Length: 288
Image 1: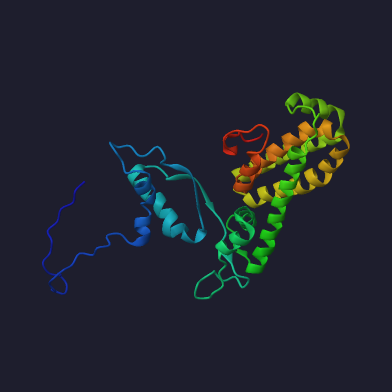
Image 2 (image 1 turned 90 degrees about the horizontal axis):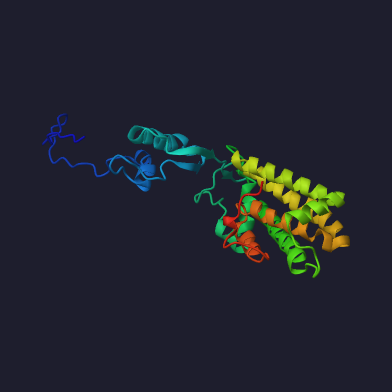
């Protein structure tokens, strides 16, 4: 619909002349509400991009009304559709006094410094611990360094597990496969127990990802890898290494797939060194 009107020569109230049209037709937040439509394709012959609506949007809750609600309202107005199917409002990081990070206060933490010191995957894992939906977290450079260091050590632990299972695998171990796993499972309670806990882990991580409880998903993987798998099962497997090799390989591969959304670089690197692998770990089916 085209709207036409006569341009006034003077202001009807103050009678002033030389009227200049405002160059900013929409204010910042209102125009931002058009973001889904402007980036995913304006309507062509009444149709929108196949990516509209998309599945997932993430944001801090402070712009819930400034931006998120406007995206919904404008998308409903122009397309009669909500622009995204799921909305995740994560908490915000604040300093130990509860203040927002800001340049003026000088209380911010440069993520680039953390990444340079501890690596991307370690920083990602540390931040997932603060990702409780709608709950802000308090932290400092010292606390972040401690968390990042812990997850760097976790990455080192995973590399050592990989080295033990793959690089130091016995020459005459059984070939990996479901049949060998089922056979070994029926013979030893340790094998049955680790496979049972692995199944429980897969169910728990899947549920936590689907409900956006990412902090719980990372905690579950961390505890399983470090304690159930490394401290208990791997230590016990050393006395009957050839027999347990198929199970060791299966558990390792499933761990890498479950952990990939959270530590993408390390898991992809290790996955590519498995005896059998695809072009990318992202092409693997989610373990259930």
